[in-house]
Image (cartoon, rainbow, N blue to C red; front, side, top):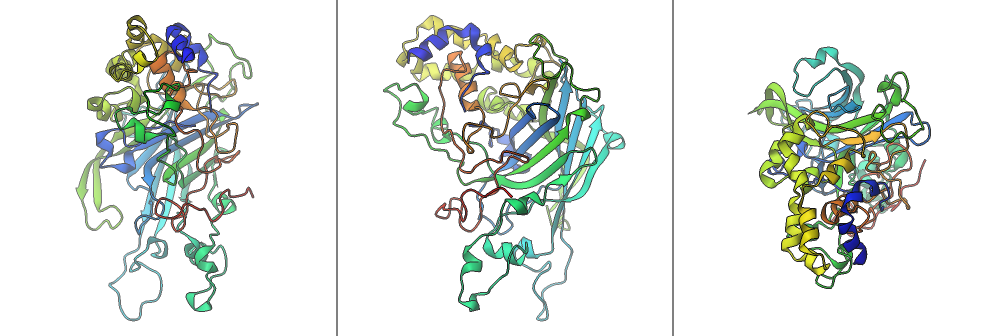
Length: 512
């Protein structure tokens, strides 16, 4: 408790402490009213970091369409037709796009006549997608000189890969054999239940969907384990946190916190990009930290767009819609918890539909005067910690320390076009949050490098990112990969997820 009290009083040093934080994840699952009816536009997490040592690769991961129960629904989790998924990258102090990587999915299902007695197995009359003959592919393009409000950039797009197969879902043992061809199948009449109980969907199979790109990079897209952890049961009961999240104060509810995302899958795009794509002349002063320099900075955020008008179209058997008009942004994400932890409910949809270029004028007050501090005060948390009114008043704002921390304490103007909800990382040095955000890489295979929930919420509420508040749950339900694509394979529909016993057919899929 004394640590938290001293942390709050030592507010001025907050930004410098961010680099020494603890190991899990943070996210924005269904944080805004607008995404409740449009899960394809629901960004949850964005990751951006450079490879250790030479820093010659940039890794980008975007998660969206979350909270998928692995065995739910006969169509599984499908790639989203009609949307553009984009990674935006600016450099230096500018948030303007220098490079954009765009991913677009295409699902096809050939028309077929109504059923007849002579039909064989497979085709459009099947009840389940995986034997319907449907295909899922995607295209990835590199765009330069792009602004997210400009139309016609298709003319300047360079296609890096097209007709790339999407990683299929992990349905279960029979699909593994009959559809994916991962092993011999024996029917019910064999008397042997192996084909119904032993899954064969493994890491080597996942790796076959990693595609090489024309610029020397790699990409994979499909369903994976959701890498996010948080005790959301407590968060959404008006910040009803347990004692472990609040420094042991006796008035808090009893532990433990529970990760409600255990067993859920999410749709992910993972990119490996040569850093020369961004810095063709090499990273300035590579491997040397210059604290007051901005020339080696990358400014990364992710967006989702679709056609402005959506009309019901029964002839479109995939989506049932026809999109017309210009592309408009309907989702975005960068820093964990920005829209969910700073922006109030009535402006969260505005956040999703706008770019970081005007975040200071639109959402600056949300950061300078964090609502979460006011809520914590009203709940009696600060009084339980013995903090006086003067300290609480300081925590209520203005909180320029938060802005400086997410800008890595670099000389970045706090102005539109320079400061906003982006992941800022120095490509010249190894990445560690808030200098980028890594996937995995923690003290154990199922831990992230940094618990960004605890870091950010401790910074907001205590003025010190190392205060140890909001630790929540610290481990993932699967091990991360130590190499690309880093994401853990999807939970199996048959024997995993929330409807089963949560005993994996193979808990930790071995490396090939």
